[in-house]
Length: 204
Image (tube, rainbow, N blue to C red; front, side, top):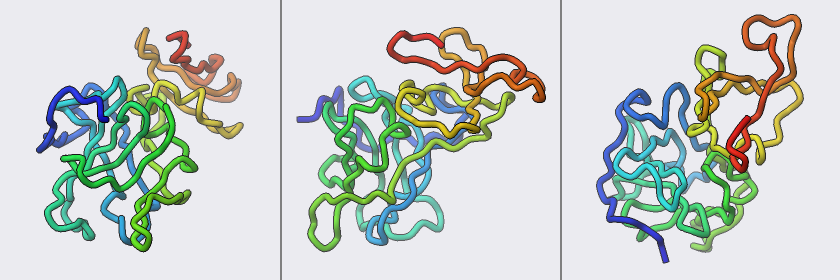
């Protein structure tokens, strides 16, 4: 049974990231769905009417110009945590297109191995490791990620490659940090040792 606070039919779509305190420079994008589910690919926006469900981020997606493949009558999707699963469903929750059995704190930190997508042939939910939702952004010192965009558990769940640098804003202090080692050849913040945020202890 879904743990919901209210009906959320007809979500308002954020016209731009600047309208939301939860989104700034980055976007949440899904890729890799099979041909029968191409409409779940694309950019998602934080729901302004109900940004959280069960204390985890709630995103929506509506048809965009030039997007094909949306089933007749379907005008909005949302991805949310229902208390035990992440799920992608129609706005009335009558049609479920994907689920992930994980307690990740954000769609961006759900492993692609956890997603099960609706199969057109069997009409069952089946593994589809090509599909994932990922946070994309400039990722610079001037335009860092918010933890609301990455997911507060990002640094605990995501295995970063050794040379991968993530710029982010500490949600407690508002200070911009990078996640890598100190670089003596770099400029600006890279000259300082990097940090990573822990959502369990709520500090870098």
